[in-house]
Amino acid sequence: MNFNHSRLEWRETQGNSIRFTCGHCGAPCNTAMGLDGYSVSVLGECCVVEYMRVCDTCNLPSVVNFDRLFQYPRPLVENSVANLPQDVDSLYKEARRSCAILAHTASVLICRKILMHVGVAEGGEPNESFAYYVRYLGDNVLPPKNRSWLDRIRLRGNEETHEIVLASKEDAEEMLKLVNLLLTVTYATKGYH
Image (tube, rainbow, N blue to C red; front, side, top):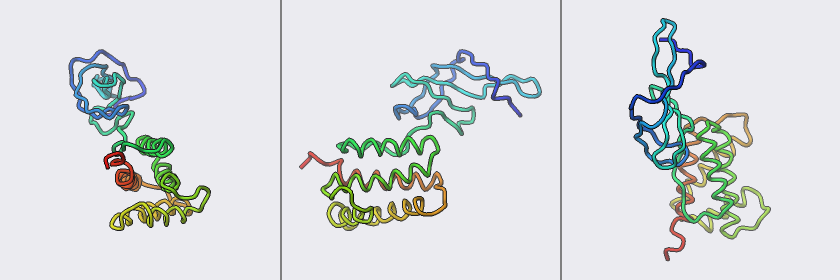
């Protein structure tokens, strides 16, 4: 059926619980609190096509379409990491938010930039080349078995920086996973010596 999504009529929910991950706070939700968006098909049928539900944890709304293929805001990719320096934390959140709003190339480029900030935060000299920070992290910060993560972030980030290509969702999610691992190994256990 063909529904006109530009003419939604929002009505109080009829008690339909919707399962989703909150795009604001990341909490799992199963809530009926919110509104249902109705649309009329070309045949004159009225049907729910969107659900607006309020998160049980943060009380902010998310919109989920009827077949759950789209949600706004989308949940963030990967988890937060404890004990990050402020600038690294800010960049990591920005990369995660970029991926959530489908700005995949931006997310990959930010992941590349995170390597430089981690390098300086871990004792590297400021204002050096990107290659310097990759070398510094590999030689001084990461265990040898984890250096392949660094190389994958470097290669994919360089491709986005120096070539006329666009990152896919899969590219951005892989980079965020690798950056999450790098940050977890480097920072999450600090203070537990």
